[in-house]
Image (cartoon, rainbow, N blue to C red; front, side):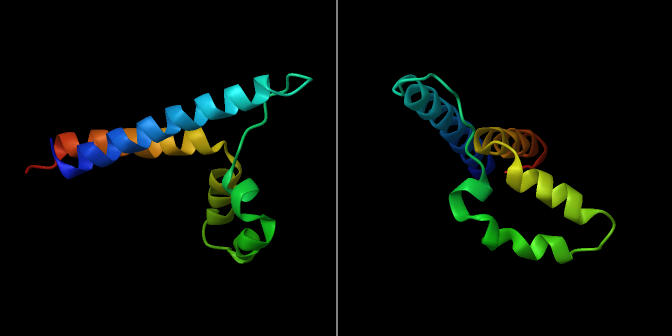
Amino acid sequence: MSKLAGIGLFLCGGALVLLLFQAISSLMKIEISYENLSLVDCFGADSFAWLEGLSWFGMEKILNHMVTMPLFVLLLCVGIFFLVLSGFVKK
């Protein structure tokens, strides 16, 4: 197994563990409500204030979407990207 495949499997496994953790934590509340965790929730909105200053071919919208999407989806997409990339790269 290549390093890229290992990184991809690690990220996909981390996404599944994070999703399981979020599901269990939502069940432990009195009122069951699922809340997604994103990069903005982890680091705060002030950490990503510099994104508003980008004006390079719509990169602001793309990066703003990436930092506000659920963290498990981001990890899963990056993990799948590394798994696909490992199929094309020779050892």
